[in-house]
Structure formats: C-alpha cells, structure tokens
Image (cartoon, rainbow, N blue to C red):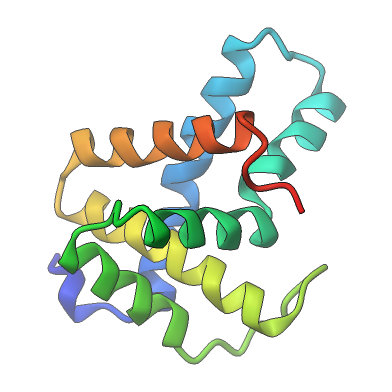
Length: 132
C-alpha cells in the first residue's frame, strides 16, 4: 500500500495506533499499572493539545524530513467529518497531521524513524515542554 495515495485521515487512523503503542509501553516501563492512572497519564502524550504542541516543537527544531512535513500537512489539511472532542477544530486538525506522520512512516516500514520520533516526543512530554 502506498501512503502517498491515502488521504490524511486514513494515515492518521493508523498513526494514532502506532504512536499509542509507544506511549503505553513507556508508561508501563515507568511502573504505572493501574488502568485509571494509565489513562490519566496517557493524555499527557496523546491528547490533541499535546500532539499539537509536539508538532510545533518538531517544526521549530526542524526535526521532520521534507516528506514527513508533507504528510503532516496532508493530515492537517484533510477534510474531517468528525467533531473534535475536548479541543478546538484547529488543534484537532494539527493533531491529525501529527498522527499522519506516524501512519505514513508505518506504511513505508520505517520502524527506526518511527521509534526515533516517538521517543523524541516522549522525552519532550516528560521534560514538560508540552505543558501550557
């Protein structure tokens, strides 16, 4: 399957799951095992606001490649008929772009780059760089 042929929403659908696995493994490795705590802590990493903050940090650091940036923009600009929950539409669209990057890389079988970005994101959240 060629990711270039999929729309941003499709890429984000897959990318959401890809990034979530890294976050869940990270939280379990920290010793967090109670479901309610796992859910509460995961929001710091996977909420639309956190993902939007992360993509802004990546952009400022020139962290994404040209093709990754193109996939981010594809996801951000995709027409979504889903209403954003707990955030504004702009933040939701930016987070969709964030997830699209992971979906694109997964379909291109770029596991090492996925891990690099996911760990970078986790480090940013742990350092408090995504807090308002």
